[in-house]
Length: 105
Image: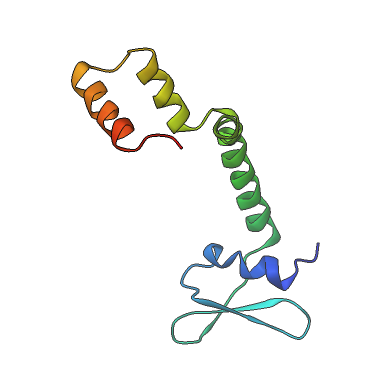
């Protein structure tokens, strides 16, 4: 399995002490520490394990992105609560003042 430079550059967090990734002529990456010492590249097994971890993390919260996209905006939700009389009298008065001070069109 060949890993392109762009992908290897993104794997820098897997190389302990690495602060940069320098592209080599063969398209691979040379990882360097703060003193520009060459560090060993992560093994394919380490890369695949981290990829699997990241996919599991992404999949575990994927529903939240769908929900965020599908929910009405917070403004619409709050406006609905205001019109239904759900807010306390104090909060309703504050919202009414804002609405009165900034009428629609």
